[in-house]
Amino acid sequence: MITKTLLFAQFVRQPNKLSVVLTRRRRRIASQPMHWDPTIRNPYRGLVVWSLPEILDVDVTLYRGPRSTKYEDKEWTIAIEDISSTGRPRRIATKSINISDFVDEQFGATSRHELFKLTMGITSKKVKEVYVTLALSTTFLKEGKATYVFNFAFTLEKGFD
Image (tube, rainbow, N blue to C red):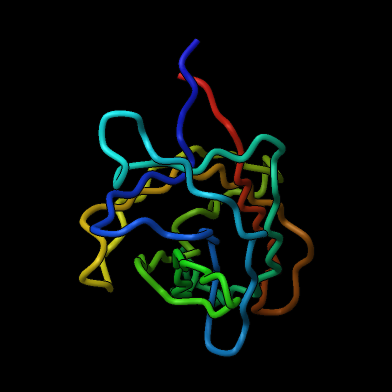
């Protein structure tokens, strides 16, 4: 049994604590800051593994026309922040995802689960490489005239190969 890393990073200097943040416009949902564990071979390479699952819940309203089968795009940003010892967050990597790509067109199944790996874009000179492994579950909540409300749960946890 091999455990998957949730967050892997290679730095030029060692970070203090790392946090995963979901943002869209003024909305911001952040995970608890976790300690970064360096590897034995290279102290500037390391990973963060959540021992207990942490769920970041987001309710999203998606729009779809009466003749359309696809939902309108909604871009969310997943960011990795280094929390300094003084508590100041500094963004080190980001990745934009389109939430409408994770919704089933048919409502036969009200829930959908995916495990995916994101290679993050670097925003700091002190970082060489970052990737995140997330579990995403989608649940249909309610339907309006042209609106559909979904709950997205981003699970930060230890996975298995």
